Length: 251
View 1 (cartoon, rainbow, N blue to C red):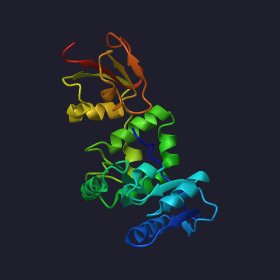
View 2 (view 1 turned 120 degrees about the horizontal axis):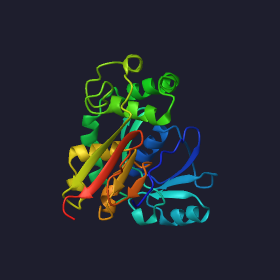
View 3 (view 1 turned 90 degrees about the vertical axis):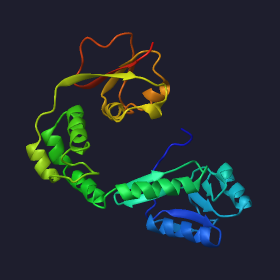
View 4 (view 1 turned 135 degrees about the vertical axis):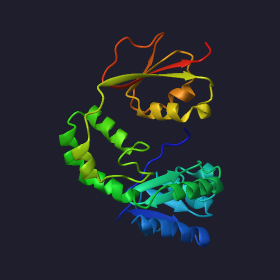
């Protein structure tokens, strides 16, 4: 991973913008949408966007300012992604400056898939946080319940026709399963060859046991905070939630 994606809260904060023309105007509009206070080079600010002024980039970086240099990935401390805006849901697609055209094409495809109501669903889940915590006091149970509700075909499926509102889902939700073990037998070393079922299980796992020969690229698809445990055989006993056993189809 060449960069760590982050979302900066810029409302009311100064951002240096240097440059003229169409590219600078586009960056100005983007900053204004984010609520930033646009200032000049001499102002005290933590981040800057510079269009066609390499000397300004050098001066700002010498001051410790993080700089985006438009169309100069080699001079950038950060890059600006293509954005799908379903406030408060934001999808950002970045290529590290390799191809803005590719990022744009992916944004257009994702934008067509993401319903306008996605933002309203996020707001409803936020408003129901206290009720969700009361319904599932244990953090693991809570995460699994939310995952199941938002899964494909679930009552809150964000890409489907949500069948119920958040409040109704909380009232009607049944207790989740105590524990289960799923086996994934991999037929390829390439993570892009994962089946849809395998990719979904990797994203939902509470923990994953795996043979030593399972590629790192596939282990990286496991939910980020789920432990990865190298082992020779599947676990005899499983903890609560979803446990995976990964092995190659051919040793």
